[in-house]
Amino acid sequence: MMENEEKFDPARTCWTCTECGRSFTCKRSLVVHMNIHTGEKPHTCTECGKSFRQSSSLYQHMRIHTGQKKFICDQCGLSFRQSPHLKRHMMIHTGEKTHKCDQCCKTFLRASGLKVHFRVHTKEKPYSCSLCVKRFTHKQNLMKHQIVHTGVREFVCFECEKTFISAEHLKLHQRIHTGEKPYECSHCYKRFSRSGHLKAHERVHVGENPC
Image (cartoon, rainbow, N blue to C red; front, side, top):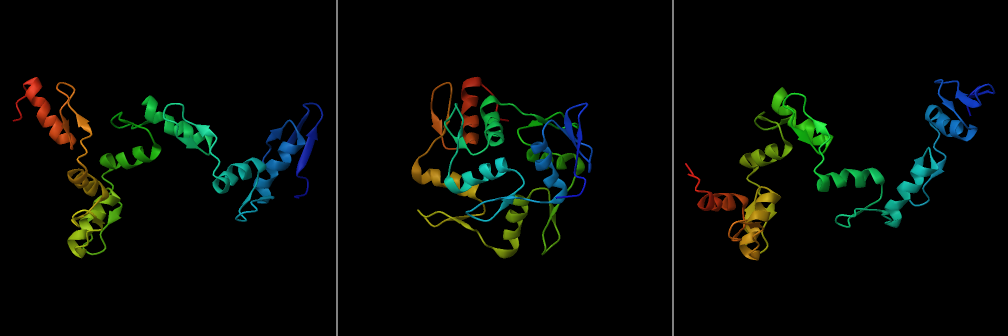
């Protein structure tokens, strides 16, 4: 424990941290807070040995080992170990997009999505090909490009052994074998395997000129 770590103020009935000046209504809260300054992590997981400053953090961590997921989405039944994870998931159902681009006002579900989008404005291309020094905005674009050099296509269809440069391309291809048609026309209920095919078909109903 650090010297002079605590100071009780009877006038305000609070405990004050002498390191940063933050005040607490009870001594226990101050003791937990002091772990930030000392680096002490007294709560240790008996399964993997990982240590935590607070017992509540250890409790949340233990769910990884026990498989306990007590936060359940009332929309789809998916469960989560932590409340913040459930809240982030709920945005899928509510359509809430809290992260807004200050350049074009486009909104995103996650901060990571906004960060990637912002490269459109900054022209940042953080992913560089080590073979030809060509640069890319997105990592997946770099991976696709590197096939030009390596000739390797990692995603293989087990039905016909055809190979693809991405999981998405393989997924689209596999609909040939499964017969899956997830895109339905709202006018005549005809179904299609790809969204582009549905859009082309819908022009029949709206009288849109494809040119």
